[in-house]
Amino acid sequence: MNSPAMLAGTTLHWRQPSMFKDQHELLTPGGDVVACLFGPPKLFSSTYRAEGFGGSWEFVYQDFWQTSLGIREQGKELPFAILSGGVFRSDKTLELPKGERWTLRHRMWKGTYEVTDGKGMPVVTVSSRFSFKWLAEVTLPSSTGSLERCPWVLMLVYLLLVRQRRRVAHGA
Image (cartoon, rainbow, N blue to C red; front, side):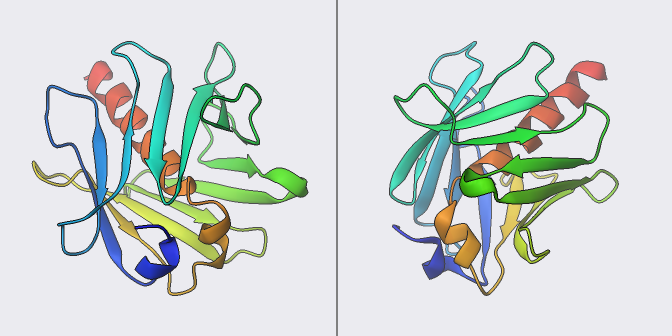
């Protein structure tokens, strides 16, 4: 699976194959092909690694309060994109190279994350699911031009979903 364009207009599913390992997989519509792998390299690491669609990336929180998240290529030190936003805000800004800005909106009562590009066109929608088999459902639009340039956005949104679930579980 080398390109998100092959999956345009479909619904993908994130799952955690083993509850004892913090590794996650993004499965294609048939459920037989793994498109992406995602998880921390060590047990108590604050860095998350993602591999898929012909690349590998690292997601690193850049400040103490964890309000800013840097995205970098694996093995590099400087991030090429930064997700920033307040702690209690539902909208976050994704600053891409060349000054482009995308918006990530969390709809708490619906349990969804929506990413839109600078023109307001949808890039991806990730919905949380309560299931023992599937953790999240990814809906790709029919045109994936923006997603072709930044396939790591699928993993970024899922990271936010997983971290939000853990915060809720610790608070209960």
